[in-house]
Image 1 (spheres, one colour):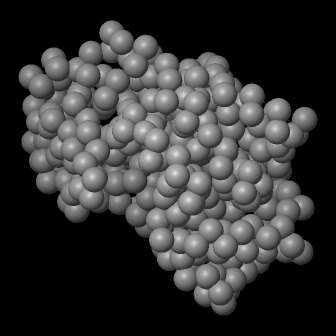
Image 2 (cartoon, rainbow, N blue to C red; image 1 turned 60 degrees about the vertical axis):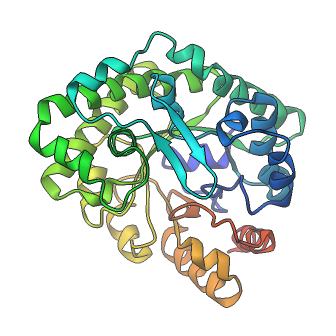
Length: 346
């Protein structure tokens, strides 16, 4: 059976734009908050296939999304490599920093897939639930953080505005920093491939911090690693759509689209839909790109933003999404209204 989201990602314009939203499963949903009370820490939920699969299904049951993205987190990759990762309430992720080549000895791939086995089981369970609950048109999406973004957290030890430690290492010791990036590239290919084997029908690479680099560093630490991953992945899964999301990089996204070899480009809110239609959609399918705050606001603000996107991008190969994740204060009713608007759009 053909699925609208997969068909769109393969370059075929759809009569109705398929839709899914980044962070569509999460704290804005009351059913998520109820289930979350049953778990310990956030990573405990990510590594519990029974609960993680339920969380993945919640927005599918409520809104009928065309894509179900597996509930997990990008930081399970460094965690699987042996780096200490914890999520502190109100503070975000904390990692034991890796700041030099010698620190790479703390990382090991020995139990990488064993550690991530719960994520693969979650995918298998979601695939089964989609079939059993008759969501025949819903595609299952796997994902990973991109090497640059993962390195930002791994080196700086958590979230930061500028990731000074990561950029300093990349500038001052590109060969040593490259060793970390090469390791991440290899692991991400393996990780995404295992997700496909467990049931994923498309994958997305999140490069959330691509926008903090200048054009030279962007080419070296965003485009080249992405191309390496895509080429390795395609050798194993040539027909699986591969979405790239280099957030916040402005016009450098054009270099990314032309040179990274991704098969679809996810856009951030700063990209004008009309410009994206004229430039990016002539190269590949696009995904995006409503400002999550428009969804939070609802009403005419949301409707106007959605209409602008649909008018300019809806005629070509396109997947409706946000330009980043759903904000936790977003009323679920706004998501329902948005999805219905997309369904009714002519």
